[in-house]
Length: 385
Image (cartoon, helix red, strand yellow):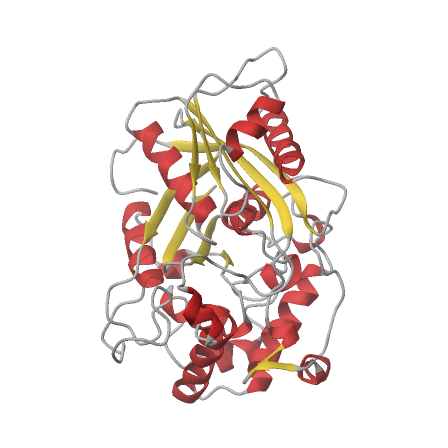
């Protein structure tokens, strides 16, 4: 499907530790579980030591040499082990580096994994100066709320539309045994939860939590049947946006500033040789409900202002024209930062392999994953089968 003669990269193994709260497990233990599952899925057994030539670990809160601790526990060290941090996009950044290394001819097989054990409560980040947080000017929830207000005003959306996103994703989460929340909800129930920061109610925000995910990449042979990593792109914000995630609540009007998600999506589509119209299934960043609706247009999946029609039509639901967040999204799964982007990839590989069970998107051949992390690092991954 690619328009160039690039070295093909296949996903040959996936593994996941469920997302949630696990008081009896360390972040290293969760990473071990995901990596062990991915290696088993890739057919790399205990006699293959280490079984890959490099490893990239996405994490933000796990401390120094986090990836080394995981692979040390598995006695699979000796190769380069690189920790990567890009907020919610950490796993996407690690995936990009791994795929690039294979395409550059450095390695044939690379392990990529991400893990996190998040503190309870609102996501805190050393990216922001202390005075910003003390004044309520950090990204969560004030920035999310302002972004949601602007989206509602400019796209003709209401709180009910935001609640419909939660209803959609939570209905998908019921079918995902690895999700933190596996129960349906209603628009009225979402709107009955307390307002965190207008217009966002509690259940419109994802829950920071714990979990891990892993992927094994290998230089492709060109044979049919494999899930192919067509593109793994990371882009950062352009300066000047008043609602830029890198400098919240400071700057100028951003109507003419291309957001990082669009920069990443455009680059990924070009690299994969496709357009948004070719995408069958999507895992889209839904840190809050408005973030998902904004993502639809930033990724070119809809024209600005078409979100309400798509929600009403059911096109983004399982069984619809193009399901978005069949895993339940972050609103169902919760978000362990380092594992977030790779968790999306695990879901989409399952979809492309037709092994997603009750939440299977039938006929899916092209899949897209999207995350946005602190510092406005946006990642877009495209997979095909």
